[in-house]
Image (tube, rainbow, N blue to C red):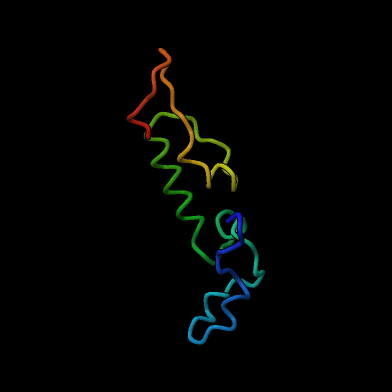
Length: 88
């Protein structure tokens, strides 16, 4: 992500037999693909993710590109100050 190494949008137009991967009409960036693009089916993935998250009893966080890319770095602490290793 930092080095723009993901092959997105227009990049695929020059690769034979893979042009369909450039299907999104807006040729946006990874933030668009993960959060806004209706072509990719991401809406269903986020709905299922939220359903799973709600089973944990934790509050659903505000979703952004930063929280998506850094989700594994979050610490879950119990009320007694100990880590909640079951939430990782």
